[in-house]
Length: 73
Image (cartoon, rainbow, N blue to C red):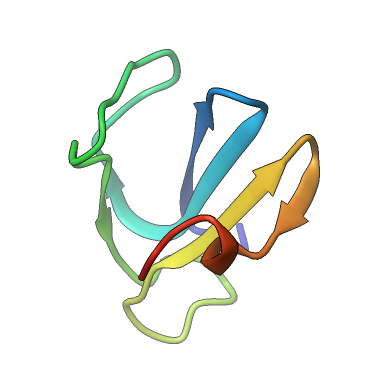
């Protein structure tokens, strides 16, 4: 798989956050999580990975959005 071990989190307001290329997932489908909860261990899995890193995406109502407009990094 090109994304390695991805995990997706459904948030209120039709928002989904996506984290790809994880080494290990620490949550499974249906688990509830709170801010600050570890959900995965970063890795470099998947055909498109070139080393350990976090690939992060943010989606709203099925459309990809720029996360810098919603999250202060």
